[in-house]
Each structure stands twice: as C-alpha cells, then as structure tokens.
Length: 398
Ligand code: AMP
Image (cartoon, rainbow, N blue to C red; front, side):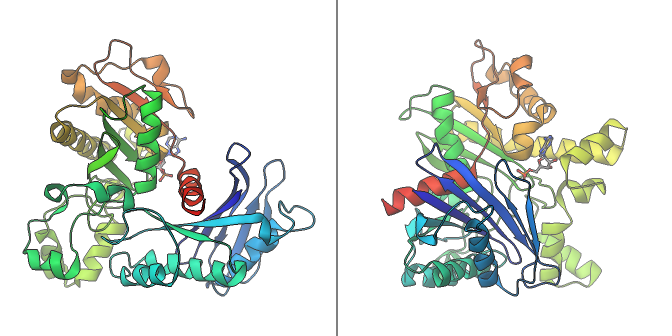
C-alpha cells in the first residue's frame, strides 16, 4: 500500500508518499510554502530526478493539496497514475488532549474533538484540521488517519502528568502535562529495544530527542512514564528558541516591567528565548558551535545551559525508573552532534557509562556507541517521523 503522510503548518504543508510494500521507500516528497501568503511555492522531490519547483499562488491548503496530487500524478515526473493508488493518508496532529491515546481513523467525531483541542495547540491543530479537510475534499473516500504527537505519552501515571495547581483546572480544562514528539519517542524507543538488544518486557530506556524543539522521555517496558514537555511544547529542556522550564512568575515580571501582555511574553518565551535568547547568536547549533569555538562567551553559556538541562532530565528519569538500560539520542542535534553527546554523557560516568569514540563518530545509522564494558548502553538512532506515521496509519486501516 502507498501511504501519503501529511504534516500541515499554518502556512506550510510537508508530505511524503511512502510505499509500504517496497521496504517503506519514499517515492516522492515535498513542501508547499507560503500557503495563503504572496509568493507560494511547491518544491517536489522524486529520487533520481532534479527538484521540481512550482511558483504558483496557493490561496489555501485545498489548493496546496490539489497541487501536490497533480505533482504526484504528473505525466512527466509523476509517481502514481491515479489518486486511487494512494491507499491511505496519515496526518500528523499536534494535540489530542486526554481524548486520544492512540492513532485513529478520522471521522466527523474525531474532527470535532481535534477542533475542541484548538486552544491546546493554537498554532498547529487548526492547520492540521484544514489539511485533513482539504484531503477529504480531494481524495474522497480514501481512509485518513490522525497520528497525535501527544498519544504515546498518554501512558504516564498521574503523579507524572499532574501540575500542582488547583485540581479544578485539570477537571474543567484538562490542564496537565501531555508531552510531544510522541511519534519520534515511540519509534526510537522501539528501535532501541532491537539495536541495544533489550528485553521489551524488562527495559528502561531514556530517549533524548534533541532538535530545534527538544524533549526527553522515560520509557519503561515500552511505555512512556514521563516526558519533559508539558501542556504545550514550551516546557522542559532549553531549546533553539524556547525557554523550557522557568519560574511561572517570570511571565508576570516581564509583562509588568515591559508593559506587555501575557500573549506577548509567551511569544518571547517561545520564539526569542532558548539558546538564541541566551547567546544572541542563533537558534541553530551549528552556528552556536562555531561561535563557541571562536571564543564567544554567550554562545558557550547557551551550550552549557542546553547540555545541563538535558543532563538534569536524564538524571531525573534514571531516578524515576530506578535505573536505565539505554540512553538514546535522536533528531538533528542528537544524531549529528557528537560533541553535545559527549558533553551530556560526561555527567554519567557515575553510572558506568563509557563511550567508544570511533563508534560515536559514525553518522546516519542506528548504532550502539557505548563500549562493551559500559554499564549503560548508549545508542544513536535516526528518527523517522514520516515512516512512524505511515506505520501507524497502516496499522489503523488494515
Ligand atoms: P531538527 O529540529 O531535528 O531538524 O534539528 C535541528 C538542529 O539540529 C539544528 O540546531 C541543527 O544545527 C542541528 N543539526 C542538524 N543537522 C546537523 C548536522 N549535520 N550537524 C550538526 N548539527 C546538525
């Protein structure tokens, strides 16, 4: 079966067409940018061909989905003859609140609940629903599946997800910790069982998804028992532009001092903080590393704060699970930045962590980078959220 994976943002649409019967091969992928804004563009990539770039107005996501379908079925560079060749569509949906503990085939009721979660994911859920409705309009009866970023974390116990605020807010508004990057944590923790040769029913895995957005999760016997992100993806680690954990009083303090609204301050905490905010250099770790190597003190502080925040979450989750069998790194920084991995792992010599420098230099493959003598296995496992979404979609429609 060929599965179309769709990831909609407010003005963008990323897609991949994956052939599940041919080793989960990506047949085509691409990106629609500036949907609803002047200068819209579709970049379509087919392995073995030059990129196809189409500059054409996309007034909404429906037009974008139509252009994607046209590109997929194009006479010259198309990869399917008819839309009926697409067996199912898998949509990444940010927030499923308490309502979705798993992926689900989309119907009217599912759409109603995704709409009910708009307040919890104001930047993403509305765009996700628009993408779903655009695909319905164009692909008719083709089954569509919602894969939630929050679902994998729904196994957390109450002690991990409750905020210590009056319980009426939990009861009335479902305010609690949810966690995000669920498809990545789920995929990577499952792969870790194989890569590190662990017993699925007796395993303690800590997954560090370190990218522009970063989160750590504790996975006990295959089930998430805690994760660093919260009600929204703002909580937890220091990130590219997000502040991670801060005293909530900071919001009021900045608002009063700078005569700003709460929305203004949250915008600052989401978009102007993190390593960008501390360093003033960049949110991108390649730029940050270069600046640090040139002796930029603020870049050094930002790197140290990032590393220290990862270390504290790993330490907390070792305690939460009363031990750890494997620490796994994934996503842009986790997969590619050996220096950050080394800096994080240097705090865990007390656990008997030992890294093999040669293995730790390998890129782009699933690998155990710890030495055979290491008391905890350390792995690098490239995440693949699109394949994870396609897997979930297939499981739902079969
Ligand atoms: P992501 O959000 O997973 O795409 O990760 C983005 C982050 O990963 C950025 O801070 C990048 O600097 C970092 N990153 C991505 N690719 C590389 C690479 N090849 N080498 C070093 N860092 C990388």
